[in-house]
Image 1 (spheres, rainbow, N blue to C red):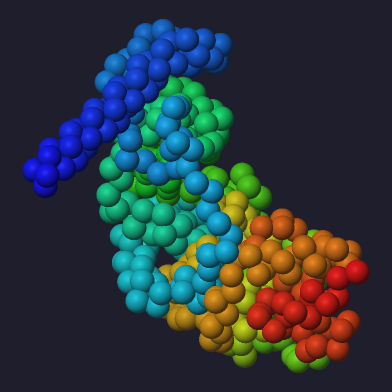
Image 2: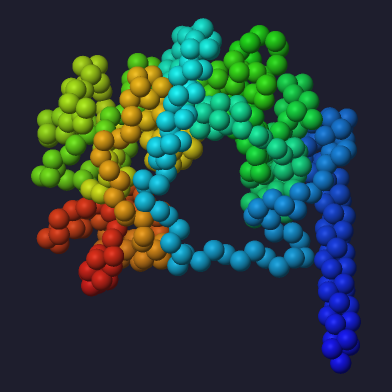
Length: 416
């Protein structure tokens, strides 16, 4: 009997394995038909030659190991439940060991590439320290392994990812890059998400912002350090970098000043913030040239962490990666490279234990009583933070401008 069961289990396993292999083979066949029947007509309309198209896809293969795939005929990926604790304390983003290592390498490279960085700053108005910080954060100063053939990645995701339209556009852009002759397909490598080379540009960003800074006639963000650094600077300049301005300052906000004033839509002259008693934690005054220019309050952990007055350049850095914490990381690293400064002075509180579903409930409750919390997604962006702070103040609670467990029941009780 046991022998019979063993044979049966082995037979079923073999059968299921054959089914899976057959399913993959069928998807591979659909992919080949998709390339010719759907992608080629679109590429031709976009100006790609038949020769370039054929050469690009001659050895292409589906990469079944990439994340976020939805192969046709396979079970759809399960949606992630928002009941998980999907965000942590902002402090976990700022590994001191990592920042110190990046800063030390960045200072060394600032010296090694001083002439190039000086020329870049003259051309684009972006400080070399900021360019180096992004270079270090994105690809470890060009030393990180970037393993994936980009056409394989983009073709796979354009055909069977959860966001096919995005990757289809990027795939067409990648074909334009190959046709331009800037890079050979064998050298055109990127991340699993399609970001390429040392600056980690998507193909569409490459077409818009990559530059040939070493004068060899090619925009090479894979092998050329001058091209890579200048492309980062050009990106920031095109996104609106204001030459001569800082990215921001860590500050202390007096207890009597509301933390519910943050956001790029609530800018005011930095002198006005100073007039409220907001001061730099370094003890230095705000630079004279900055005082008359606009600045914005930023409290990414509410009253539970460092506070900042940031400039429009902070939001330009966010164009590279739309995250307050990313932009703060780049700003802090740039300061360390430029002046040898260290970590933010204020500690990050342990405020990362809220469930997304709990924050989502708070957002819905705030929306129901008229607040604009931004995207209702269970993540505490600046509109959610300031709405919480305003609601706390109006309900006799000391404003913290950040969700915590004690607010769940109180907000539910406020619903009409």
